[in-house]
Image (cartoon, rainbow, N blue to C red; front, top):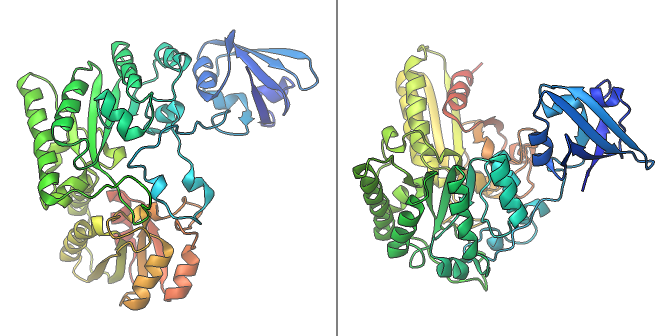
Length: 439
């Protein structure tokens, strides 16, 4: 195996040694190179020997002293992974991608399940498409943590939920990773009447037997209005959501009684579904599942109010509105009111926009579309001429495009407003509040 060089940065070590696009890197220090993990792992060392197959059929070996990072070699590859991204082989009954309508950009329909992305970017993987070679490599390289989409520790139930005959047997990899000291973050997507209740209790108990378990997140199934010909599922009732929280709290109490650290956390949505207030900041410890959205609202409230207390008051005039999904509306209203109480010349409104495109059960800001926002404010024109949007609504920092390919400029023109985009962390949000003063 080998990886093909796509570009070589000018004046880099590899450029100076005569490596050119089309050459293939086969080995580093005698180790076969198949993808980005091999490349980055084996570039560690005081001395490097890089073996190439030249595009003309010849061979070339480079010997280099220790480099600061693999990027310093100057090699660029066609894709970050240096290999094709691995597609999910499951047909989970709760898959959100199966609930997307047609006509969205193609990248949204790709189901990734790639262990390399778990390590590099924190993606969750199901373990079902790992080969023995993959497992051995993860252990050999000590790729940690592994973020696993577990859903249930009952092998038979996992097969039924994921519609993959390998779903049950692949759970054994968790034990192998744990025995090798690889930390494990587990995710349980819970479906009412399927893997909650006694099944949830069983999963928590079995996961707690993994000595390297780091954390468990429980999140409710996400349902759109596009579920034709799919497994019938429903949202959690308030009572069922409360039962999930209570089950997890009881599990953690058992861990503490045994002298162990808290491990499991219900997602923010469970508290909202149960009609319960968000827990205090201390509830989440070190926020081990923050990247999974668990504790995000509580964390933002705490950090925003802490930063707000330290901000020097002024008498500048401010008038703008925040646009968000229904899930964050109440929290952002609380934060806006706290800001206006200190900065008394400020007028900040918060608009929670219902998701008509995917259905009203989808409440997160990141899944709002441009057409829903335009329709909402066309029907209810905002008094403010500046609207602040969270960055999660857009494709990227540089591509300010909603999920439905409506651009932020098109929204501005349709509504006659100015759009400002804020990162979704407390410090960035407060910075936007402070600098949006009237001329």
